[in-house]
Amino acid sequence: MLLHPDPDPSQLPLLDPTQQRYELIRPLLLDPARTATERAQETGTHPETVGRLKRRFAQQGMLGLVPESLDVHPAQRQLRVPESVGHELQRLKGRYTGFGARELARIIFHTTMHRITGQTARRLWERLPPAPPPVRPRFDYHSHPERAQARQEVITLYAQGWSKRSISQFLHVSRPTITLWSTRFERDNTASLADKSSAPHTPARKVWLPVMLEMYHLPKRHPDAGGFRIWSLRGKTDLSVRTVERIMALNRQVYTDIPGTEALHTPAASPQPHPFKADGGARVLVY
Image (cartoon, rainbow, N blue to C red; front, side, top):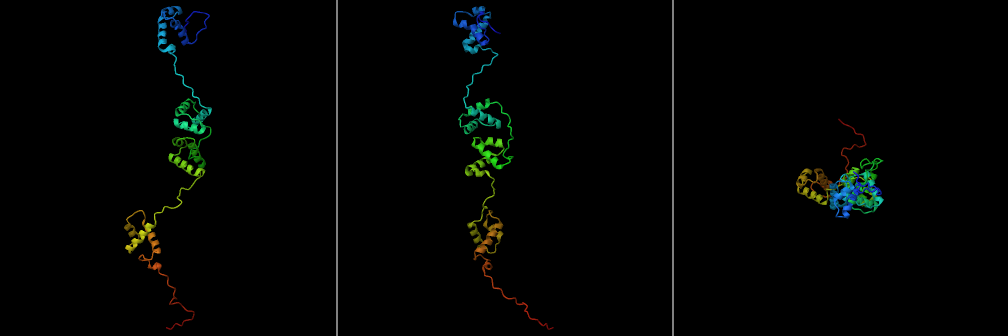
């Protein structure tokens, strides 16, 4: 309902309801001696309406004159950040939506060299409109055509400030794999992106000189023992029976004082002629 506080045709019409209500009670504020009934008779309104508006203005100020149909929200402070920060946040929102507040602030610093707090990054993120879906198809870590490029993308996102959790969900790769590739890149640089064999360069050795010496003394104390007996006398299961037998065979070729190795270290005899070798002459058989 539009109120006309003063029936003066020369006065401009008031279209704002809050301003209309203020003009209705303004004479009462300027002259406390006047009553609400007198002002109601002058403006053609109900005295209770004038009294209620005067009391609400005294308690809340101009907010008390705002109609109940309007919602009053406090004005938010405008965040002053460069346009590059907004563009980067919009680009990130189009790729992935699971960032944390501190993670967003870290990514913004690494990509735009502009420092913002995590709360500021979160408020800017919530004010951005929904991003359209990406135009090009996005490859994850396992479906990428080039393994080296997939690893390079992992390293690039990690260097830009992405957390391992976000990289893991974005590229579908486990966190231990991300840790492995980042550690390799810090150690070997770009050479770590190429495929390498996971086989060990040298086989794992279990037989060293102390074990060979142990295998040397046991056959001397037990001359008639074989490989299985020596394995059981040793009392350890780190070596197999076949490995113990190979060590014993190697010791027999090296040491001459092990029982049963005399034939191995005796020089071979010179060849003798066959006693029944046939000669070239003819033989006469007499019966």
